[in-house]
Length: 162
Image 1 (cartoon, one colour):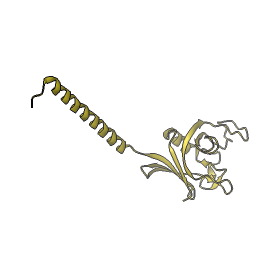
Image 2 (tube, rainbow, N blue to C red; image 1 turned 135 degrees about the vertical axis):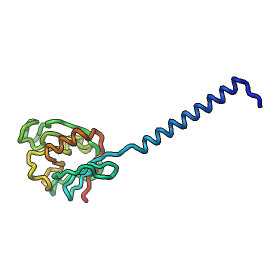
Image 3 (cartoon, rainbow, N blue to C red; image 1 turned 90 degrees about the vertical axis):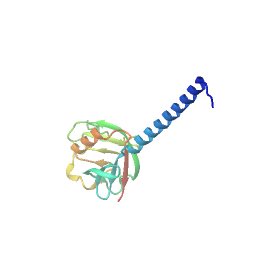
Image 4 (cartoon, one colour; image 1 turned 180 degrees about the vertical axis):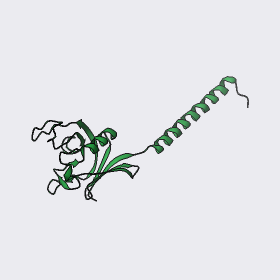
């Protein structure tokens, strides 16, 4: 088999391209397989919020959830809004006020445009661990500030009864 230099270079180029494509696919698949999944799981019965890493809880916080008649919705959502010192519209209480029932941070869920249900602070931390809210998830201000800082927009939030 006698190949000209030109034909030989074409074959070598094609082989190098195929090897490059294969290795890029392999590297991309390996990187995707090693990527960790972080999400938030809220367990209503226990009134606990768990920050999960690959189905392992890495942080657990005591929260308040919705009372009977205004229960916290169940399902899978995303964090779609984040607000520092949110304004409490129903009673016109400005953000930053110690009387503001939303506390110091708001992380809105993809249910009701990001401003109807959310994870937020509270002006009444003594009620944490109970089902007393209007459907939102309340946390100690220090805890929600930690979460706000570490959990990005579009993070998955799973809310279950059990």
